[in-house]
Length: 472
Image 1: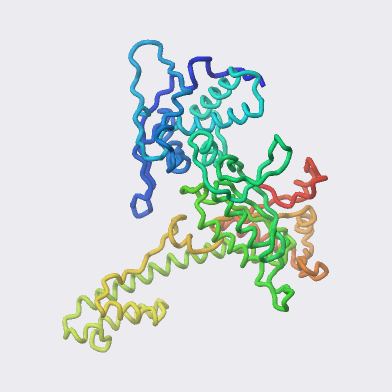
Image 2 (image 1 turned 60 degrees about the vertical axis):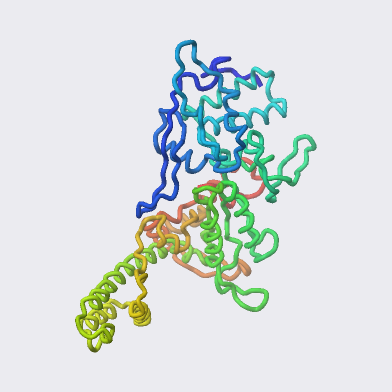
């Protein structure tokens, strides 16, 4: 390939005329507690604080950068100064703590690695084209004219530039030298820089390609910052028969397992959430439960928030009644003798706080436990209420066909077919199902819709099989 320079000049490097400055980046909890702080984040002065925060919090490598490679980018960033006094560069003295602190470190490991891959595979006509490619990429990254997806920021160049490696994680790669698929023997020599994967899942619990195997495959992808998506329509519905004679617990029980797994994994090993897409065909017997799933979880959050406030209100009243009692110490926690306590307890019972829970709190107070102060939840997306309910790590989509849309228009019957015995089905009104979809999406933005017929009408390689899930 011949690389024509559009933005840079040979010998000037990619950063000519860019002013660099040191920024501070923080993440705080709703209560104000600092959970991430970066004092030295060097970036172009033109970048917004949000852009700097994303780079510092998500994409800077936090460990393993060797001291002798901190300034590896300088070998490729030719100074553009033509005489006169050079402006001070905040990237000249970076902390030697094994972490990245300068945007140019990240730009270099990306651009250098991409260039090196091209060089190894003889893509470039000459060394000048290799250098032009590198300079143009760094220029576009620094000026925010282009950017790769998250897994590239996380993984690319860690081995090629820093020598960071780790044990194999079950990845495979295509070896152009042999024309074969090869199992990788390391984490980063052949990194996982790809964005989204559509994974299949079969109606099987523990075997390869089944439900628990999917959880493992998803974890492998989440760990390095990629997203996943699956169509779960092959999994049998609740009450369908199992080979052992029992009945299935249903689709949602397994969706909740995958959702909790995704919640537990920090995508790319930093603070980013795992990206998981869930798709279901509109003729699945559990479709109504699936449609209502996340809207019902929203109700749980509202209930937890309200309930925790009611508990706090009543507990404060109980504490005041105990503290203000002026009779004998032995009667302080005796509701027969402490009339204000009796009143507070009646109020708590009137607000439907479980008697056993009230008794537990009161006995702890009586024993001098100063930590009787149950948490008050909020509706903040990263607070414990939302972390407790299910469905918060997945984007849910419903796969609908032209036949379903026509049934809605005609106010016709729609058949929900069992997965094991397709001749067995349940009849529902298509328009009633459509109303449920619209109502739930209005409440919580899920489920989204994927238009199965249209997507497959536009299929560019139908010989490869029907598309059953696609990134929404």
